[in-house]
Amino acid sequence: MEPFRVHILGCGSALPTLKHNATAQIVEVRGKMFMVDCGEGTQISLRRSRITFTRVQGVFISHLHGDHCFGLIGMISTFGMMGRTANLNVYAPAAFEPLLKTQLEMFCYGLEFEVIFHAVDTTRRQVIYEDRSVTVESIPLEHRVPCCGFLFKEKPTLPHIRRDMMDFYQIPVSQAQNIKNGADWVLEDGTVVLNARLTTPSDAPRSYAFCSDTRYMPRLAKSIEGVNLLYHESTYDSANEEKAVKYHHSTAAQAARVARDAHVGKLLLGHYSARYENEKLMLEEAREIFPNTELSNEGLVFDVK
Image 1 (cartoon, one colour):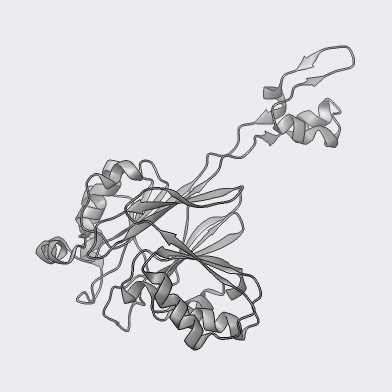
Image 2: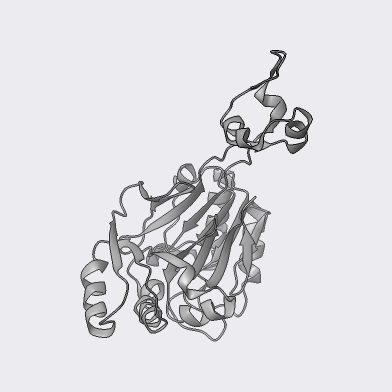
């Protein structure tokens, strides 16, 4: 099974701290590297993660608050200095396009690659990226500005060939693809070897949902039903729920309710308010509702499984 991982580059909120960087992640799926949000300091975290800069092929920006996008223009500038030639796709709310264009003209003149902007309608759930092995969908969220999350989903793969049965029936390797596609095998005496004897079921497709800044949305559970891994912002603990309501954020307990109601595999908390010395209280509150909860932290890597 090919890697499907989430690399945490930053999990803090708007106010800078010495403990956490602003929001940024790398989603590694089927050999591709996608960045989700790009807060200030992302380049340094990317260096520490030892992920090669040139492997980042697309950036998804959830909304236009600085702690989610201030790091992008600096990273693009660094790409230019490193001699990048592959185009970079940026997916973000439409209002970001003129700002990005101005920044590129001011700070990134003469790039040897093109920055291709894709406007995302944050009010609609739709596929915004697709290739032969993965799709990315937007997930409408409710924040103080237009905002959406992103759902990364593997496409189903073909069944696995049983090498022992291929050898037993002396089936040529050239027929492996046909058998993966469902063909039976006919022996010289006319006996049909059913495909089910020659293959094992494919791996179940995996999925990851990134739910950026949002107020508590009970109905969100339907949009992310059954995902293997969910990141849901958890800026506050329950004692500060009034602040969560005021600023359109969520508490850890509310994130856990979404995870529970969506029957997800694992929940990651993040986007912690700078008021907390540590996030143990939020973890405890979430685990009372959804036990399989973890704290995201810079440098951690989570497998989607």
